[in-house]
Image 1 (cartoon, rainbow, N blue to C red):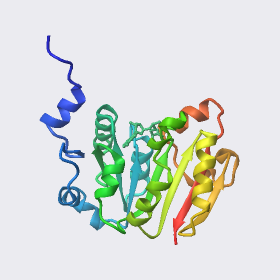
Image 2 (cartoon, helix red, strand yellow):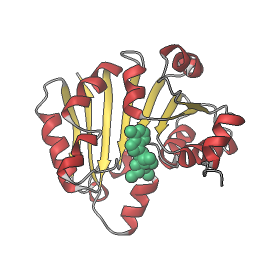
Image 3 (spheres, rainbow, N blue to C red):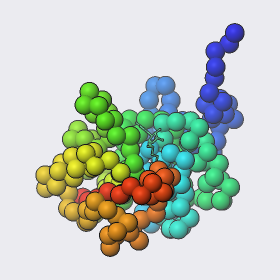
Length: 219
Ligand SMILES: C[S@@+](CC[C@H](N)C(=O)[O-])C[C@H]1O[C@@H](n2cnc3c(N)ncnc32)[C@H](O)[C@@H]1O
């Protein structure tokens, strides 16, 4: 009996998808990344969403802000393919997706490239022994600073109180970041109109869970 093949992986590998760049086994190459996003140069600002999932947030951003360009990076083939299909159906030209590991991707992109990074409802890796996998942790912050332009923003939202508090303490302790805003209950705050929801955010909203949000700026 043959081993199971992820049909979404097969789809990306065989037919390709003009909106998806798949992570090569040898790792991301800066030249490939550059040529994939070369069209973004015509746009006013460039944003990256880490763990873009089904694309709900990024697609809404791209549709609402046609003069900006949006990049998503998503580990899972199925979510990435679904997001790219939705973006294509909407006829969006200002959005692209990387299928692969976001940390490896961020390592491989140019410095001072991004106007903003979104990290929305990242996996919380609750057990202490797994917390080394969290995207928002001390070792990744210099990487975000390096890839953001001066004045670029890092935007983080989650329902997870402990992960949020630890990230807020970390960001506030670093003088390279300025605080735009922080709220432990975004929907009841004055910042509720500033953002577009992701798929997970809509789920947590429907469960009446408070949404925590912070936005910091590279000084
Ligand atoms: C909890 S989901 C949230 C999805 C989306 N941001 C939202 O708010 O609806 C986290 C997503 O991050 C993706 N992810 C986890 N680790 C990743 C990594 N290292 N690189 C890229 N994506 C990752 C997962 O596959 C998953 O789709």
